[in-house]
Length: 231
Image (tube, rainbow, N blue to C red; front, side):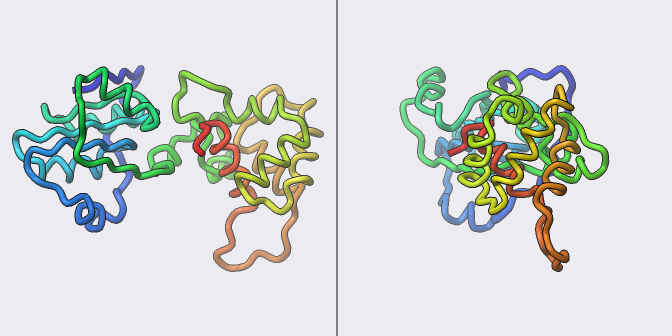
């Protein structure tokens, strides 16, 4: 059962759940339990959880991203599964709306998924900028809040520098913020490629070391956290 809607079905998830054995071990599941997956994603963990809940168990899966709920519906085509559009922070209200007074287990797998990174239209992935790029959106829920492009367009230089330092621990936050403000007159909307190029030009690194992260990684992380108010 699901209350999610989508203009286009994104298909089954490509994301592989991590630490599966450990998650199942610590959840200590059994028949008849009510379990909440507060970040259901593509349904990888939830599908395995359902297998251990017996015929009377219930799985409530939440996600802020409607596209992920559509993907989860492929994995969780089960009458025991309820999928709801919303944040785990809204869990009390969601449980009230379902008439559920208590749950036995809650799982939160925080962060973003391979599915979101692979979707060039969402702006999460730096690699899509290297390959040409798409819109710099970064919202988990496309129906609410400013995009990452909006933040780059409206925040002051000092606010951008603070954001990159607080949420990304970016050492070159000041130089990057100055470069972004300087480019505003050229851009009506920021793309992934715009931000990748701006960061690379404004915060030059020394000779690239093996396994070194991309220069824009911390900036992308900071923007994503700010856009979605993750903390």
